[in-house]
Image (cartoon, rainbow, N blue to C red; front, side, top):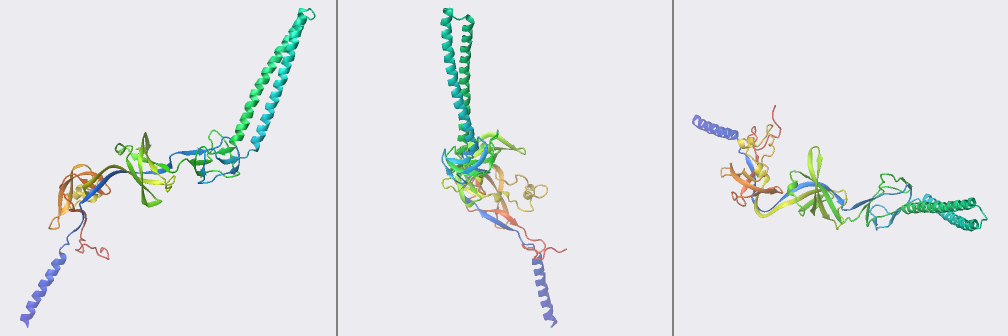
Length: 405
């Protein structure tokens, strides 16, 4: 019996030792890989901007008064010269009537002055004849001459009054004309800031009553481009953008203007780049925020690798430490795609170990980087991430109950 028990105990002890050492053996790290692809790559400059109509006219008032009528509302199409609002014209009508009365009175005074001048001229002529005949004295002739000169001055004064009252009449007529507010352009009313009964006052800063977009089928985006990227932009480049209102649609436009005036905000220098947009379907509206990507360069049929492959460094190696800052976070600029050599990616060996392969890169875009040398070929799998096993459990999965204290 003892001869059977002892060998059995030895076998069980060997099995237990094998299980123990196997369980204590650390699990190997696992790696996530992606394939090297061949296709197109587009280098872009990203920015945000606001959609606006190409021509927007703010309509104000040149006279003060109470708004009596509104002929248009939001989104109303208007034609040039079309009445869009009416200020109460009663005051302007009374002013015009008063000015017309003054003008007619000035005309009457001018007629009276001319009649008086004609009468004094005849008297002066008669007195000259009488003086030659010795019937009157020289003083009588001088008095007639003075009366005639005064009559001529009265005519000039009456003529001046005519000019003055005619100007006042024209001003009253103009004010009455301005009481009817008309559209200066063809377009669509995008904003109305007044209501019937509201008093509007014309001053040095004319109030804005309406905002009219001249043509919403053509719009533009004013974007802010950082000074480090402005040299890469040129007029005529294609720009794609999205808006929150249509998250599944992509719109396109063209760079039409690069403004030279810098915009400094918190010591950050940017430049305004205007992008023209075709809005024939009228889906886009003024004020929408656009997320813009301007196409700088495009290459077709090139090898490309994911950006994550350049950022990857095997954990626990010198490469990982070199690519991190003091607190373990990725250092600024570490692993970012850039032109030139000095970069490398990692492939998996037959022993499931990462092997470094030097690469040279070109343009970057859409999460990929161009390979400029044939160190890799299509469908090669590059490592983009590493999952380390849990040291306490000896496997790639941590304890569901959490760490022990």
